Length: 72
Image (cartoon, rainbow, N blue to C red; front, side):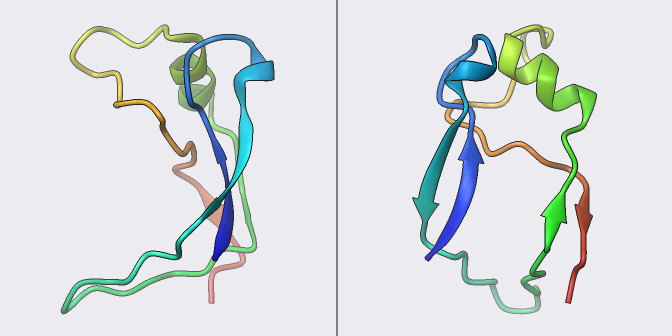
């Protein structure tokens, strides 16, 4: 198991939830990268606020993060 911050619905920062998730299993020919930390990018804030143009908004619940640190 692993933990992830999840955006279950749009709204204020109060909607963010810490959830237990099953660690993903990489498909054949893929790798799994373990990150020590991740940055909150401005796009993550826009997603949480629901301010992404129609057709570009990811499906909710959404795990934010496009940047990572401490990969091994």
